[in-house]
Image 1 (tube, one colour):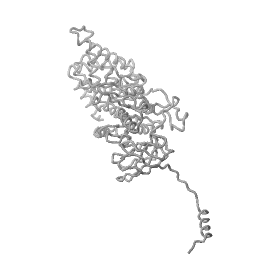
Image 2 (cartoon, rainbow, N blue to C red; image 1 turned 135 degrees about the vertical axis):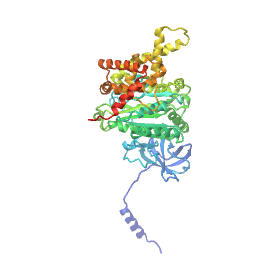
Image 3 (tube, rainbow, N blue to C red; image 1 turned 45 degrees about the vertical axis):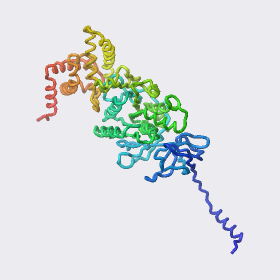
Image 4 (cartoon, rainbow, N blue to C red; image 1 turned 90 degrees about the horizontal axis):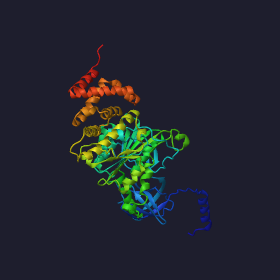
Length: 538
């Protein structure tokens, strides 16, 4: 039976009349080449730099493998894959998402261990949050900021007294491997307990066992409640190690922009730079010094510049960006050096960006000086602005005494006979160095720090043998808290060392040292503690 033309015409008219145009726009491309975590894609002419790209699903999970566009070339786009590349092959279809790489944010993340994309790794179920934030953000402008003037206590005497850290500061922790860099940062996190500071620990290129031990310590000390761990271990793709610190920073920025306070630790940026170098070389970007790409300085500067103390009226200046003013984001980046070479490329880059550095030395570490902080070389460019008044008054003398001891110790090695003043200065320095030693994961309150540093700088510890200083410290603090509660309470509430308080502290230190030399201090401290614990009977 033949087809009549009028039937075809009527059918076409019906189809045309019922047609409703619906356009679902999505850039679609084709994989040209894949390998080593890099995919070259043809056909994504409208892709943005840093945009999320959707690759075919992973056969094991059924979830699409995501990538991030980095190289926007004339005929193709080169992307780094944020997952396993073994299931992706030439000819696979790739879609744009229209979204820059982002990470979930919010208070529900705290207490969790997540990867660089905010996906849970702790087996506690999905992260429940409706908010997300691009990992790359512009740093606050000059007008959005205010000077750092509020201390962030680490609980470590060597840092809080000599190289203080303020909220909104960037303080570098630098040293060779196995010198206690992570321990210093973890101590700072633990010390934020019972404060209003949220913490983020970003592990970049670390061993899984190392990250596990950090999580265990945080859980054991109760610090995990206000901490989120972003883990991109050595076994994770280089792409995840690259975006991990930006993801951690984005989580902290969300809290800062709400007027809250946040501390973020990047452990460590040396491995972050190496991951970026690997990606850049695979993307065939031209290598520069030490084979790092030319934008390696920008890599860390655009990360660390996001740490800031916002102006109190920042939400009025830019209401579209900030929900409240006065929030802070403090950064503690860690850099690992090779054989103490602080003049290498990456260390010098990060030193020039940060507001000071804490040097940890191998020789000090093996000599038993822990934390192994070289107080002569370490510096904080914020200085006394990040200290309470009492600490500012007692710490000035401390740095001077330690500097004199360092110079005289080198001279005394070649001198057979020393005069009394030189010997006294050397003895004072030895006791101050003993005073700065501290147990790992045992941060000290700023009140107790002020009391101990006062006892050391005013010469009260000179009467003790150097090897008894550490044993004297906990018993003395327990005794003065029980016997002279008015001193500790005044220091805690006023944070200032007045003349009357100084006189009372002076008398208490003399009395305590005398009791120690007589062997009665421990007994009295225990008796006072028992009296306080015994309930009164009316």
